[in-house]
Length: 417
Image (cartoon, rainbow, N blue to C red):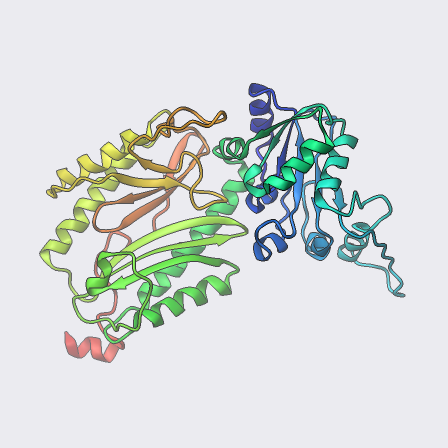
């Protein structure tokens, strides 16, 4: 189960909340282990789904879906047993001679009698909350996934309930990862880093950025991942976060990438830097300073440390490496969203949410996930706290700035040498 139920209940008790209602796709996935396709395609509240998670354990969680999600629900295994729909009421029965598969049984069950709670989503959600005994309760709404008209309908249907705009409560719950989340994050990191390695192995004089980008996309797609973004630049284009272009690599080019991948809804963010051929003395110095910054960061990354302290470690490490450069950003949290609370590891920012601390400079805790970036060189580390320790993921040659092949084929490489 992705949901950190124990933490969710603890925070609901702290804020006197009786139930939370998820509405954004990320929070529906998080609270139900079900990934609706419609919310990824039909944006702006066209085909919403919801989960209800009560604080009391005798009030069972429920999932309310658009009927068009039934096939995807049948193909997955949500952690919620109570599944309901809205829209025109319909029925379905299995008539084939062969026994139904478990997937077919799950599909047909979505349309069982009593499963449809109303024609409109607001009507259905209000009815479901009423049936759960929550009609006069304090309910935290994932309001960023709802329209104002929808919330007004809920207020009118349940006048005795006390509703809170509480998407930030979900962010606070998700700050500490469950074991299932950590498992997905590890897979996402492994897939992303493996694809980056394959892309850099293909880098050589005469190869275009588009070709390298295609290799990365191929690796990700072949292993069930989805590319969220890809910054890829060579030569002078490595200075910024450009998308890939038709430019072909030349000897001496700096090649830098920053790529985001998600696997089973969970993200990974990887940076890498290399040189086609031998790096210059300046490139070596910058890269070495970036590595010193990273190592200084990791010395400070532990439970109880503040993001501002980790940033200070980066800057001290870079300066110790002989580069007089000050960074105002050292990384960010990551999870089912590319940046989770407390978002960036940077200078503290004031917050005014009723569910969040007064500042983003919150102490690190066990089972948080962070992504550390370091210096001009664009090196990074994906970090997961497990058992109180941060474990940086490394791949062989990560500290090596020279790309394996300075030209398109081995023959060219041999003649060049």
